[in-house]
Each structure stands twice: as C-alpha cells, then as structure tokens.
Image 1 (cartoon, rainbow, N blue to C red):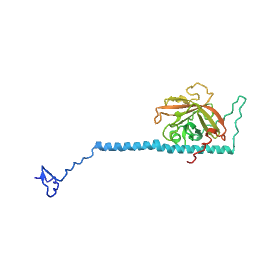
Image 2: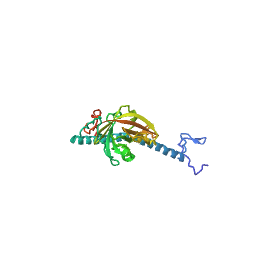
Image 3: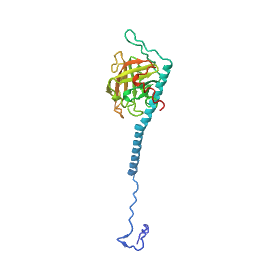
Image 4: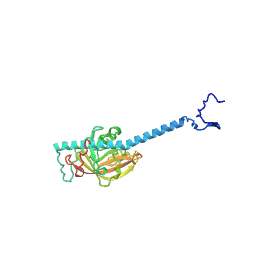
Length: 275
C-alpha cells in the first residue's frame, strides 16, 4: 500500500510497473539546497571579479584620463606665463666679470599653490606636469591638475641647494613610471613665471622610504655647505609597489628669461590645452 504522504507519479496509459518503476518516465534528481560554503564561495568570486574590474579601471582607464587632464592643466599654466612674459619681456641676465649671471629665485609659495611646470622629453615628447607646493597626496600628487609636488623644506628652482620634487610612479596619471629610463645628460626643464631653469640628469640611487637624507641641500651630507644648484626627483619603486624609492639626481645647467622657450621643447610648450 502506497504511503499517502508521498504522492505517486502518474503513469501514462499502457505502461506497467516493472521493478517499482514505470516505463517512459524519468526519475527526478533530488534538489540540492545551497550550503553556507557554496554561498560564501559565490560571494568571494563576485567580490574578486569586482576587485579586478576596479584595478583595471584604476590602473588603465583612470590613468589615461588623469594623465590627459594633468598634461592639459600644465600646458595651460605654461602658456599663461609665456603670454604674460611676451607682454612685458624680461632682460637676459648679463654675466659678470667671472662669467656668472644673477639667477632669479622666487619666494616660497603658499601650500598647494601651482608655481612651476616641469618638462622631461625623455618621458614623452609632450610630457609635462604642474608642480605644486608640498607633496600632499590628495591635494597635489593625486590632483587632476597637478601630479608633482615640491618638498616644502627644500630649495626653489635655481637656488643653491637642493630643489626636490616627488610624484607617483604608477596610478593617478603614472607621472614618473618611466623615470628609470633617463639617460645621463638628459635635460629637465622647470618653468616658473620668472623663467626657465634647465637641469641635466646625472645619476640614480635606490633607497629605503626612510632615507630622507636625499632631500638635504647636499644629499646625504648633513654637515656640508651647498655650493651647487641641484634638483632631486623621487618616486616609488618598483612600479605598482612602494618597497623603496627611486632617486634621480640632476645638476643645474642654465637659466633663460620666461619669454625664451628652450628650443628642444618649443614645439610642445602649450600644446594640448583643453584637450
């Protein structure tokens, strides 16, 4: 006698039971209830996919957008200073009897203020960034209109001592991702409203993040009196990590009035505005 609590599957007419089963029918598979482990696994897989999508956006698309905006902002700032200088050109400094010229040095700007534009042809034919005061991550390094920050306790462009700046190697525009490609003798141009300061790359150094001595007026020599005009660029190393710092040391080469754009970058200065 059949158990009244378990209804029997209806048999098609003309079929007979054999061995407790009816021909022409299929046995249903038991329904598997979701387990805690299964649900947790699906959640983790979904979370992993979302993380990968975010990283793809952060490391590729967002970098393209930020790179373009930072470059455009630098081009606009650069052209503004040139336009101002052409309206009231500054005289070319006259060398003294020893062949030295009086190089103008601007006063330290307020925090977060844009005071310079940096051009490094080795990093790209039209590579340029705005330099702001301080190395604040959110307001300077991650800014859509900056990307490079000045260590506020170091010297200004053209000043005897160490003009030190920082930028990301990866993320937020990949500012200095190609810094390690610099060759000895490569030019670095720093533009301010006072003129053009040209530096020449000299050498690299790899240090721990705590090695702040590289920012001294004479790097790593706290007791030394500075006699040179240096520029130090710092960024994280290796790319997409922050285990150490890559340091690029540069020496001063020459100065030119603000209306005299260096010939090597004349074709790209101001290019890309509003793009």
